Image (cartoon, rainbow, N blue to C red; front, side, top):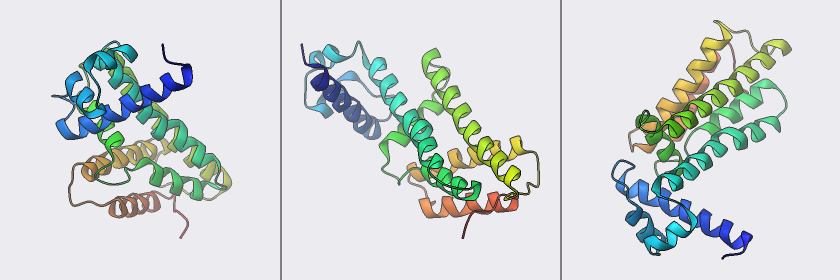
Amino acid sequence: MARPSTQQQRRKEVVDAALAAAAQHGLRSLSLTDVANQAGVTRGALLYYYDDLDAILVEAHAAGMERVGAERAELVAREVGAPAKLAVAITAGLPTGPDDALMSLLYEFDVLGGKSPLHDELVQRLYREQLDLFRGILAEGVAAGDFSLTGPLDDIAMNLVALEDAYGLHITGGGSITVADARRAIALYAQQAGAPLPL
């Protein structure tokens, strides 16, 4: 049996292979063989680390949640003042570009909702984390006098999450919207909603 550090590294390599294979084949048609071929190992080798394809995808989904959830919250917490925090939250919540495999997989999980109770729970938990992050930043900005919201705080937070998800889907879908376009448009909405970002 592999040592813990080696096993952890192998599991990460399998998840990375799943992300690459999903980007190539799409989540709907992804097979364990696709992941094995991408990883350069046999199906049996994959099954040494994971019970099945769904177990691999759950871990990939969790990795995406970590990036958009905990890791983003940590980046935001380093900033001083709600305007700076909001700017970082918006940037960190968008894909890095059309080839961002991890974010692409997260969007596919959203689209395929209803197929697995566990995935459904992960999708809902990530949405709540996104919403709570924006709510907290907006509330901090109002309390400090940095923001003067033009509508209910909860509605503005929901719109920020919706814009982030919609633009992210267009970015990873290879559309004409760039990361810079999306960041600028979300920042404009925030300003119109009474939560201006730093220049």
